[in-house]
View 1 (tube, rainbow, N blue to C red):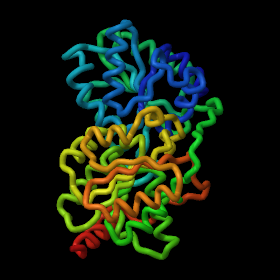
View 2 (view 1 turned 90 degrees about the horizontal axis):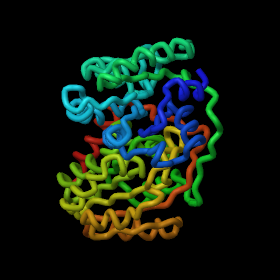
View 3 (view 1 turned 30 degrees about the vertical axis):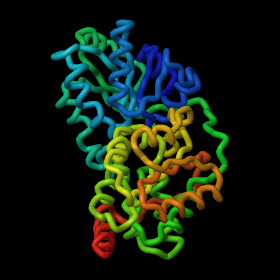
View 4 (view 1 turned 135 degrees about the horizontal axis):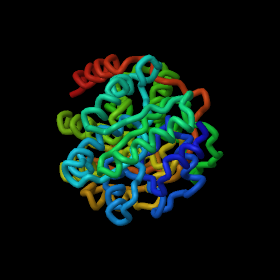
Length: 374
């Protein structure tokens, strides 16, 4: 279905959400139509954040908003669905548009498989009426379902359109870019050189794929790295748990700006805990690049000031390789919690592969490495 007709049939004039590759056509359409315009389109920090924004929109206008997300975001919306939007509480109607990663019978990455299996069940459990949109869904079928859903929404209940791969087509071409020069793969390569044998926790998406290939190309094993293939926004918390329990070893965290924003409260907990062996590197390209390139608000905030306000005693920002190398070496030698923001360009190699080990193999190799440390 052409994405413009999908948009027309939904009939909403306000969208908020977290980008998803399965919804790239819709995301690009929204960016082409509205850009980031608070009156019509807000890219949120996380999916629960989207629910709050959508609720405020409905309270102020009486109209029905749309919240878009990957199905992994269902976990972040369960609480506001149950305790805010539900017709047993405030009865605030929302149209959810959910990208179905890990659809049963369709090959996908390990972190999406179980989530894909329970996508519809979670909606059922939350009493959210839903309709699956695939390549064969006609405009007439979607229009009929939205007409049916109008009564559900009018009763203060929520509905969901679950979007299969390739269901939305004909998106406009949107050029996502920034003015930064450093390549993420080069940044990660430099981190591996300076960190040496220290344990390293890496965020989800292309960063982990690049780290895996860097180790492969160097002929190294993968035991030093924990690849956070799912659980977006939680890699710094994982690294904190390791740092506290391995106080004699430096522990590195490679974070991304979208992940950092998604659960920014983790930075406050890290800053309050102040593990002296923790090095938090934020690679900031101000983009949800792995799922298509839509912007994050990290291009307009002062991440260093955020870190300092959260209690990090050392926090800097760099945008050159020489500056990065210098700050990595300082952090390695320092006794104290460190935060390094690295301004990064968009883009990755077209031939970038994926990890060839399973998550359980990664976990066992990483735990073996941790046991060998002091």
